[in-house]
Amino acid sequence: MDRILNQPWRVLQLMLLKRLGIYQNNPSIVNIELKSPNEYVEFYRQKLTDDYIDELVAYNPSYFSGKNIKSVKEEMGKLRDLIQKSKDEAASKGKYFKNNELEPSMQKNWLVENCAEVWAVRDAILQGAKIKNLVLRSVTVGTGLVKAFCNNNCRIMFEDFMNSMD
Ligand SMILES: [Zn+2]
Image 1: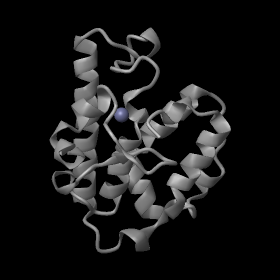
Image 2: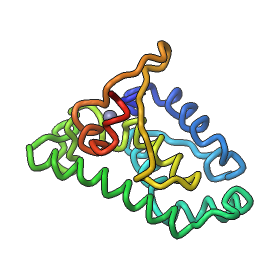
Image 3: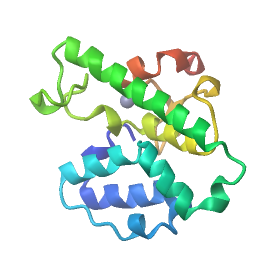
Image 4: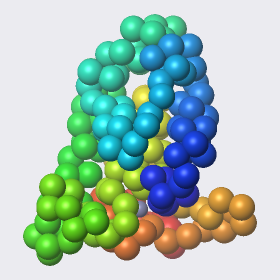
């Protein structure tokens, strides 16, 4: 599950819809058609914005009732900061996704945002969790075995979560 964007696009879209399953009554998600990797990247990134949280709240007021939206946005901001931290470190080491200097990533073949861990944390935030309280563990889909965070995007992003991997 690490390299979401390396999957064939159709599979990826299905995964994405499944991942966003609780929001399926948002017609802008269900009916969306993405035609290229760049569109996917933009689609993913938009899902990490405060604007998108506002959209979700507007479409799913009952899901968010009782949740502190301001706090959800603050936590999403922290997740964006973690992503940026990973990118800054990659840039400082001259590491880029597919040698594209606009896209720092410790992994040559996938973007920082592609890691499944990012999306797991995002889901938890949308459910009202605080990042500082999260324990993160990655498993290999299929075997269910615990696996290490990827080198090094996730390690940089989630180094404070690492105890859960012991
Ligand atoms: Zn990763």
